[in-house]
Image (cartoon, rainbow over all chains, first blue to last red; front, side, top):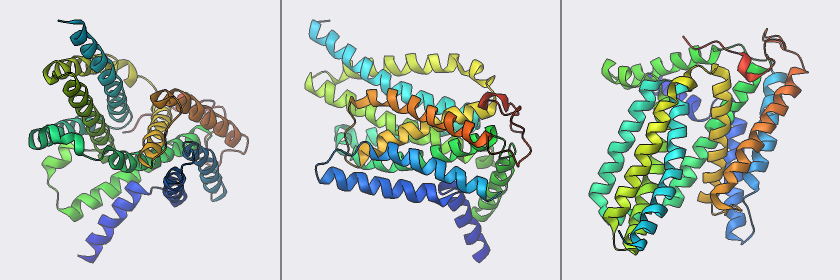
Length: 67
Length: 267
């Protein structure tokens, strides 16, 4: 039962989080920042494109460095 | 028909055509880059769920918080898209061998299916959960938006029936065009498709995610026309940058001169 649960959890972790957890964490933080800025009445549409421009090279660099 | 009726038909047709293009793009991408059967199953299940929602809720469907749905779907699409782009760039730059993740994915999928006790019938219907999930989410979200458009436009003009006909015309037309270009898409090399799909998912994910979190895009839907080429340029620049750092996975810069040149297809 325990191994099945672990396998099930591993499947969903791999499915949603993928190879680099930095991407998922970055997306959640950026969405939270977008929400907070929007609530404060500040234009926040730029935050997710900035996230992509920062997280993608960082994630690639982590992948290259680990090989 | 009166001029008002024609205006209603045209407005709903165009608005629903945009939504249908977005859904068709996602389904075509999922089917071509991953697995057609899974994408078709995801589309079918999404249509059934959509029909059930409309049948149960009727006009009250407009009360479903589309912003929350956009936030969740946008976050998942953004994560998926960035993962796809990351892998496509690593392959195109020679830093990742082709298809090693497909083997790992199949292993994890088999483990998860065994753990969940799923039967062979479901496996046969959905060989690829990525393709299924992407199609399902895309069709369900866009389908809900089509329903909202029909109900809001139709209610305002007191002619929901005509609005529904306009929406059906738009969806059938766009889906037909999408089906027609399916074969040419299948001849595009796999890594190129994954590169393009990753860009599209990232753009749609950022767009919906930001809207779901409360942001408003300059130009509304037209912002996608900036996001998609912008992310594509970024990904191409990163591919060029990584090529200069060498290719430890064995792919020479010559064979990875562009994403389109990594042309092996999944077994």
